[in-house]
Every structure is written in structure tokens, then in C-alpha cells.
Image 1: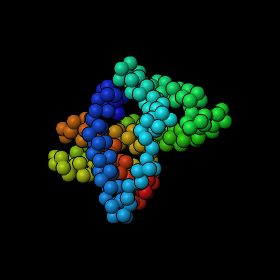
Image 2 (image 1 turned 90 degrees about the vertical axis):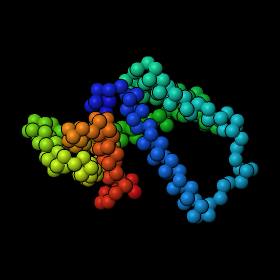
Image 3 (image 1 turned 30 degrees about the vertical axis):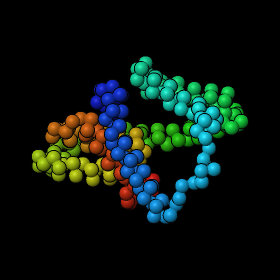
Image 4 (image 1 turned 60 degrees about the vertical axis):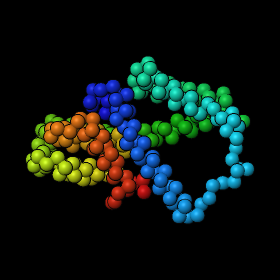
Length: 224
């Protein structure tokens, strides 16, 4: 999103912060209400470990996240470089410190690398497919035509256009991972919203969120 809009990554984070808070706050309420409905009680005080004991055994877990955030916002490194740096710190703490007397072994690293490769392969293939679609649309002019069609279909009514864009985003997002969904929607749907006066970052966040709705809505609902 930062590359599409040519803005600092920190602006994207700030734009996503409040919606993220609302999401997790709503999730907390749902879990709390469901726990009350199921009669789930809080665990016994004797089973709750003292905070000092918890921090003593797991203090190093937040370190890679701190490194990631500092690298991104203080040293202005690229997301890729920041992630690599944070991963290196994570590996060092896993090998040298471990958790509750158990340290990471070379075999564990090989397993992690293999699983990462499998996950990345799926993502590369899907994004490559999305890239072909986007390339064809741009070369043929269909992408620009879709933007005009959406604006005409909305008839200048921004609410109606948002509803149409939301439905299209859910449909195009079916069965795809986050990055693939966003790249596709940022090219096909977001320009129509920007065209009628929606703030660019708001338009991109809108299509991203509704593209992800396909994960929990029929007919695919992968997450569900």
C-alpha cells in the first residue's frame, strides 16, 4: 500500500491503527460474552503465575518486534530489510536463550525453512497469477474501462458506489491470500473510489478490508 500510494509506511500503520483497535475490541467483547454464555469462569488464582516469573522466562519474545518497529520507523529501513533483521534477532534468541530450558536446534531451523518455502511458493504463484491479470487489464485498457464503468454504475452516488465496490471486493477476494487480494483490488477497484473523491488511503483500506471479508463469508470462507 505504501508503494501504491507513494507514502511512508508509517502513514499506512497510523491509518490502520484505529480500525485494528476496533476489530480487537469487538473480538474481546465477543469472546467475553461467549464465555459468560458458556459459563466459563476465570482460572484459579493458584494457577496464575506471578508476572515476574512469566517475564523471566519469556522476556526475549518481544525483542524481534521491537527491532522490527525501530528498524522501520527510526532507521527508515525497507519492510523487507526490517523483517530480515528482526528474523535474525529471533533466531539468535531462539538458539542462545530458548524457552524453559529448551533451545532451538539446527534441525528445527531446517524444518522452519522448509515450511516457509512451502508457504512462500503458494503466495508467489497466486501473486504471479494476479500480476498476469493486472498486466492484461492495463495493456488492454480494461482496467481503466472498469474504473469508468464503476463510476457510471454508481451514478455519482458515493454510498451506492461503495456498496458495489464492497461486493466486487468480496467476490474477487475469494480464495486468495491478503497480498494477492490487495494487489488485484488496488488496481481494479480502488481507482474508481478515488475518482469520485474518496481519500486514496481510505479507498485502499476499504477494498483491502472487504477483500478480506471473503475469508469469512460464503461461498469460500477459508478462515471459517
